[in-house]
Length: 76
Image 1 (cartoon, rainbow, N blue to C red):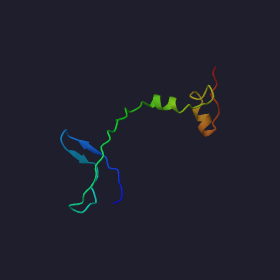
Image 2: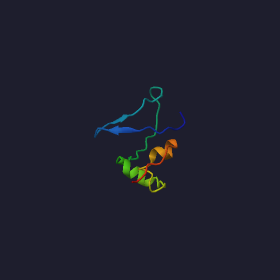
Image 3: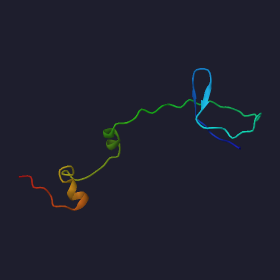
Image 4: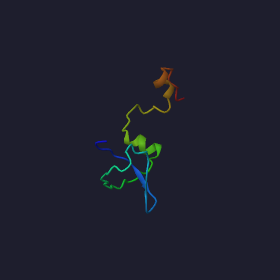
């Protein structure tokens, strides 16, 4: 094994690897620790806003027209 990055979780005193190591018993390794910041899950609206979607003003009203080429609803 030349070099590999493996994530682990700390229980306060020990690290628990997220995947098994493929090392022979007695193999010496160098361990470098780097904390991973957990990302907060985004809401659907936050994700949609970040996509900078553009479309016609009546997009939601006439969705079937734009998706399936159906007739546009009248606004009477």
